[in-house]
Image (tube, rainbow, N blue to C red; front, side):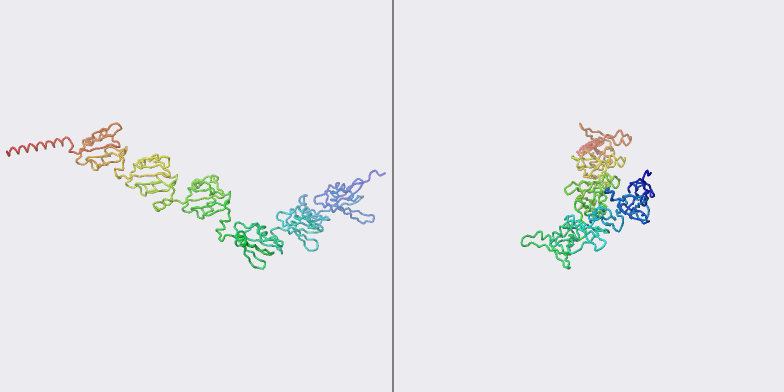
Length: 616
């Protein structure tokens, strides 16, 4: 009694567990493949075989499309199994002759064809080049879609179709998509090759091609149908650029002749003077020349104002330079060759746009002391950068004094080596300015230097005792000067009328040089007498008079110079202030001199009386 019907089957080829298996009765090919561990990667699904041995030993091979079964689910596609049948699963020819591990994506990247002979090969500017299985009724569009479509660089008007036999055929994808004419979608045969060329590698030529060259937006070769006008072709080329010389357009004919055309004159002509545009024939070339003739002018015009910055002033290569936001002020000045020997980096001037305000930047301080690049002024296209020149010394070229800005200069006058107007920077001090003027002269009055501070709303004057600074070294005695200030160093021997009474002391009488003398708080009566040449031989030194001036009343004190010389007692010296008067009387004004004068007068009278008495 038969309990169960069993099917002994052999599964060979590209399966995971090839060998003999035993299936229940009524099993299918799919169940046999599943019992053999399933298909391996790289198995060819549409070329499977069922081998069956007959009673006489002949082998019958039955080919079937397993992929078609999986797509449709039609069980009639699969052959029925019998005992001792052999199922063979072939390998795809894409896996090569070496056994390596593949994944589905790698196999799909090279196509899905089962054999090279009947496959459709698609390569060139497509997304996925490879060999694809042929199906009846397959068209060019089907093959391109199987390859993922064309790339952005594809020459869609010159797709080449190479059939197994016969001449190559050109397929215009653009024309097909524009018209939708299905007759242009060519059918393919098994073994056809489809090549999509690269656009730049394609050289357009033919009976309807017109060439446009020179200063146009899109130069190249254009297909022109019969009757296409000059402006149609020029417009398809993007039209002339802003560098084009539209007055000297040339049409180079296919026979070698050259015709000129003035586009500007055509645009301005009207009525009877209307200029006729030239006729363009297939094979002709339109040449639009460049406007400029020198490389220097061309470089200026090629950069639009919105993307350029003008660099002027004391640089080695002033001009108009292309600007990028990645650049900085240092990059721009370096691109202009850097400042020349007269360049002044302490006050770089930046004009923001055509109507923007001008700002100044001390680039020398940045280079000397360092800092972050982000602290540099932000530049944009259309700005102007000016590097001023270091002012020329006014003592060398006095006619250039006016070139020195007032807000960058300081005046030095009086008893100095080289008085004049000097360039001034905020980092300079009072001594720097005096030194630039060659310092005080031999006749300079170092005790009474005056500094007039201007530009503070109300001018003020500072008195500087430079001699005291030299004695003490105290820098607090020196004033802070600014641009626009005036430094005046007076002459020690100037006219006494130039000196105010509030700063002088009068010395009169029997001295060597009576007059008005400059007085300071550190001076005494002895200093003033010495300054005036000292008492002369007729001076009455015992009664020198010092007239003091005060706020309420004036008073006079007598000083005995002879007694002081004998004792050396400085307490005998009277206090002397500015505005006082020192009088040194003559010896004839002493009491003894007056008495002796009276005695001499009396003796003279008695002598005269005695004489008269003798004569009588």
